[in-house]
Image (cartoon, rainbow, N blue to C red; front, side):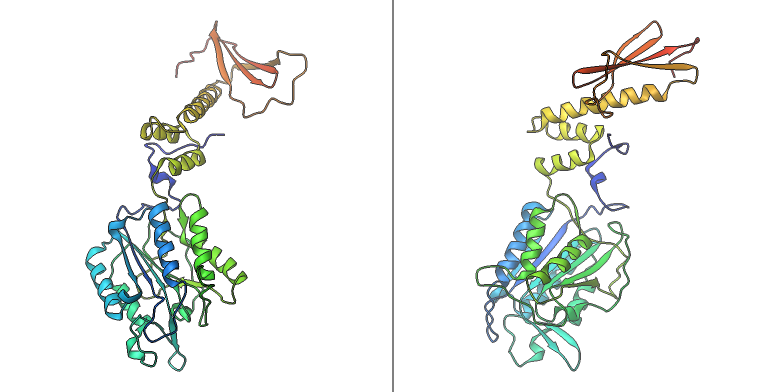
Length: 369
């Protein structure tokens, strides 16, 4: 059965979220550190960050001109803060901001405070670290529609506020959310030349997912599968105190014919196929789109006829063959074949059989509505 599309169809109707989809840009800052000056070297933090960035640029609606990176020697405390300050003036209320950090994390157990460790931090100098509270303060100055923070480091769970509150409203409402690779615990960096268990789960899901991806779905996947390959417990939460209004960021696929055809087939409506054909008049799926469009138009035509039948119309049904075949399916389209002498005949074919339905006028009726 065809799905009914809203009048004035556009690709925004593929939005999984209620409300108006923000029309701004997607900003991305990825930070990855392997080559620490005063800490143990990591193996895969930069690889993880680079892969995450590449997938968003290739498959989702992120662009190089709004993507920034700080890897290894560039990921100093000063550079990280300066980049966040720079983003304050770039990101508007219509835009979204995703921040990814992969590197060492520290925890002050006495103060129960968590930190990011920049590349130039001294191993025994807490003042060289970046406290979660400072990151939070910087994010508070970025007035985006959605802010989504992904942290793959030890003790990253210290960023998560302890609350079970969660609202299902998404998309149209601002959000401030964080996904961490673990709670207040040491997390795995993974085998040399591979990804960390957390990053592997993250990037593999971003690679295979079809259609818009709501971050709560991403979070549930990460929390379910990461512990199966490492002794760590990813966590997610709202970053309280930054103006979250119960929304969620959505990773929208990049616009191209392949993705648009997936969405068109999923919606399966007359408007969707017309839109696809107008956007890709010589597209790879042109013939299939025309075929499906004609089928839906025939179904709609037959349906509208039945809906317009007054009470004093008699419907007679008979099979052309002696015994109907089970091959005839209800979803087979009805085709109008005759409208003469006030008799409307419709045939429905399936397999080797044909079913004929006659709608006969019993009294003088004006069919024109």
